[in-house]
Each structure stands twice: as C-alpha cells, then as structure tokens.
Image 1 (cartoon, rainbow, N blue to C red):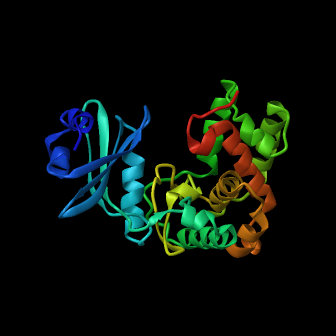
Image 2: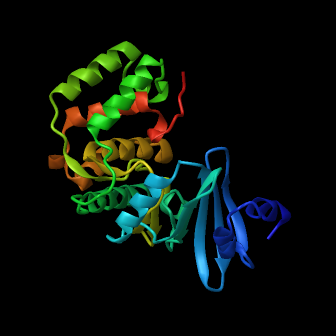
Length: 271
C-alpha cells in the first residue's frame, strides 16, 4: 500500500479501516464526486466507494435490494461520518463491458447488453425501497429548466436545436404517457455492466435506480452504444430487448428528461 492511500484511509472510520488493513489497495477512481478503491487480501476481494456525505444511501439500498436477485454485489458495509459516505461491496468476478475483449465483438456485445437489461427489468419491484419514476424525473427536469440547465449533447443527439422546444415537447409527451414500471438501473451504460465470457455477472453503480419506467434505461442503453461503440447498433439492441415492449413516445420522453436532468442522472452539463 503506498503512502498516498495510507494518508487517505487513516481518516476513515475504524470499521472501514479494518477492511483495508494489511491489504493490497488500488485506487480505481479519484475525483471530487467519489473515490473507489479495490481492496485485495486473503479473505477479501472487495471495493470501497467513498463520496461526500449524503450521496450514497440510495446506492446502498438499491445494491442490497438487487443483490437478492443476483443482479448486484453483496453489500458488506455502509456508513457515514460527518464528512463522507462509505460503501463496501464484494467484487463481481469478470470485467466491465467496455473491456477490449468485448469491444472487439460489438454485435455480440450489443446482444448481451440488451439481454442483461431485459433480465434486470424482470426483477420483482413491489417491495423496491426507492422510487425514481417519471413524475420524480419531471419535477427535477422542471427545476433544472427554470435554472437554465440543459445537456446540449443529448439535445443534439435527439435532433433538437432549441431548449424551449425540447421542454415543450417533454411536457406534452408527459401528459399522455402511462408509466411502464420496472426496476431501473438509472445509469444503464456499458461500463456499469460486469461480464464474464460474454455472460452477465451483474451491475454496479445503481445510485439512480429504483421503480421507474423501462424506457429510461433503454434510452441510456442506446446512448451508451453510440458513445462507447462509435456505431449504430440501435436496431439490434431494440430487437433483442423486444421491440413490442418499446413505445417511441416514452423513449423520446425519457431522452428529453435526460436533457434537463444532466448526463446519466448527474449534474454534468454542456451549456
């Protein structure tokens, strides 16, 4: 363990430090939003995620809920101190879906990506602890629109040139849709899917999950294919997932909600 890691972890609560002590620790991510550590020792192969306080309660709840259905890793520890949230989970064997071994076979990857999402959307949602549906998303989108926030990259992707027309279209679509409720991932992109030999082993980063509309995940799945594979695999994805399950109006609505709610549910905006 290098000194940089030691200086960081010495500020963590004692219970969190107990997982790190005498381990090989690798920093996977280090930015203002979160730090992620891979912790390896004889008894553990785990991940520690650290964020500013009050950022990970939903992620901990959704990870624990989806673990029961074999979709997410087991939560070993979740706590907060006066500055940070701490989430420790088992490592899911395999590698994420943007690893070179998978990117080299984009058609096969697209099929697995769609099949994995369909499996997630078949999870029982009646006792899911979090709701992240269309109503909640519209409320957030309205607030962001009034503050002048819009993700112009998604706006262009959807074919809009005007923020005002996108907002008007979003409101009109919302008036006439019925929510197609499932458990959503909330950030359905290739890096958050863990595969082993082209088979789904699980999902990570479900902080924006909950009971929601399947089209939100479908929209972000299509966006991820375009962004990560640099090609058009949308029809293959839709056909594999099930064309009969997809409503074009709801899909566009979820895209427009993403315009105003930021990049993959976060506050990343291109003004």
